[in-house]
Image (cartoon, rainbow, N blue to C red; front, side, top):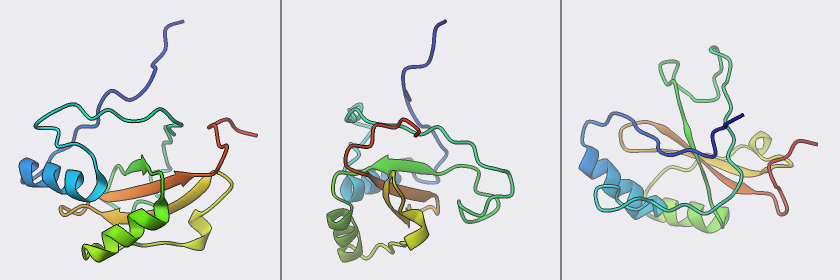
Length: 125
């Protein structure tokens, strides 16, 4: 059977697409998509629907949240805080799959940053 091999893109509405793309490039290293295609590193990707009543994403009207893998969560958090971006952490977010933190893009969308645990390959058990 044919199957999906990965995420080919993430598309969403923005009040100011150019400014938002520049923010993602400046603070998270995601290439400005107006200039090129972002080439991400291979690694685990979680496709995880949540219950409609979840509070995990924050605001009730928030229907999605992007999760980016990072190579050094502590350094990323330090850079973000130095840039004046609020970084939220919670002990219960960290688990055997890795460490997490949460930020919000300028238009309010939640962004989860994830440093996978050493050796984590995405397989359950």
